Amino acid sequence: MKINQFAEVIRGGLIVSCQAGPDHPLRDSPTIARMARAVVRGGATAVRCGGVGGIADVRAVADAVPVPVIGLTKQGTTGVFITPTVDDALRVLAAGAAVVATDGTTRPRPDGAPLSRTIDVVHTAGGLVMADVSTLAEGVAAAEAGADLIATTLSGYTPHSPASAGPDLALVAALTAALPSALIVAEGRYHHPEQVRAALDAGATAVVVGTAITDPAWITSTFAVSRGRAVPPSAS
Image (tube, rainbow, N blue to C red):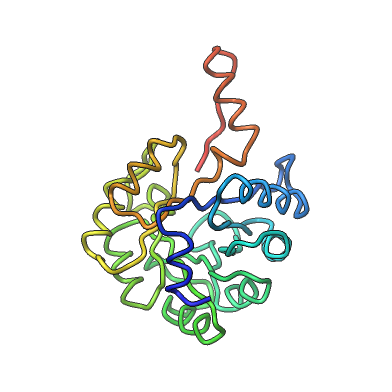
């Protein structure tokens, strides 16, 4: 898929992240694929998936839905762990993803290759790249390296970005101002429709929502805590 085609598909829309951790009751690829079909029925313009489910999840979702898939792998929980190597990126693409999501920070990557190498290889193979960043400087650097989309996914999850209970709307606005021709994707702690609207108003091309839509355990806990019965688990 060409970048202009992808931009038209997602512009002003909702991308839903369909993932589940290793100990989650929903943790298997067929379940993730059914989840993806459900969110597409509800209006998702694209699906982000993979994570700890890796290539199996990407393949299952790509086979299940008619919308573009943004695929990724996760290795570990610290440092560069979102599609961290060139080989990981190629495997995600081969599994049917239209877009490879990868860590777009300036931290050292496990295979020693620069971000630009992953981007060049994915482009040569016919795919697009979403760079997950945590700061304005990282976003600008990722765009200069050739990333097709810049996402705020890692804001609040690196030492270089402030922790927050809510989304980083300021980073969305800053990236939009600094990169007026880029596709900016808002992601990270979007839990309410009004936050999605605020991100679009701040200039985001599209918004990714995950936990607040696809994790029944977290959703249930937010209702339970309103009755003083539970503490909700953390959500991204």
